Length: 142
Ligand code: 5GP
Ligand code: ZN
Image 1 (cartoon, rainbow, N blue to C red):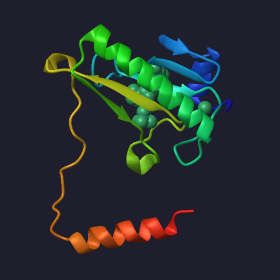
Image 2: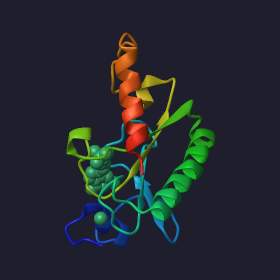
Image 3: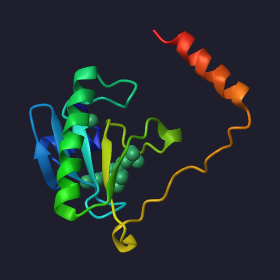
Image 4: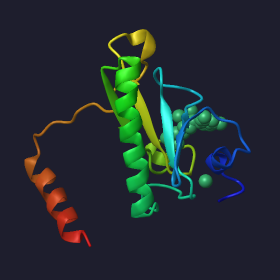
């Protein structure tokens, strides 16, 4: 736990939140500035800064909790789909440095849904460059 961390404060109850679910390893709560109706966050109870740092067991537990809640959100809210989102690093839009998965139910009704696709698709013109980057990553993996 980190004294300075907002989500550690939410996990311990020092900072109030709307709790959705909880188990030994994870805590799920509603996002205070929702991108859609039902937007929530799932975090590990143990502090990890981000995707690069989180231990495998915590990542697994958070992902499974997000799946369980996503299934229920689709049924209960009549969502048409769900986006899971993780931001890793300030340059990738992370603003709270305690790992979290966003669970964002999606709706046909745009009054409930303000999420837009965060990238413009590129072109597949440079197939050599794509292949070179893929090969380089593949060769560098542990
Ligand atoms: P990030 O930008 O790091 O991926 O996501 C951080 C999320 O935390 C944002 O969607 C933001 O709305 C949410 N958030 C920030 N402060 C609070 C808070 O005090 N309570 C809750 N419930 N959510 C928060
Ligand atoms: Zn924390």
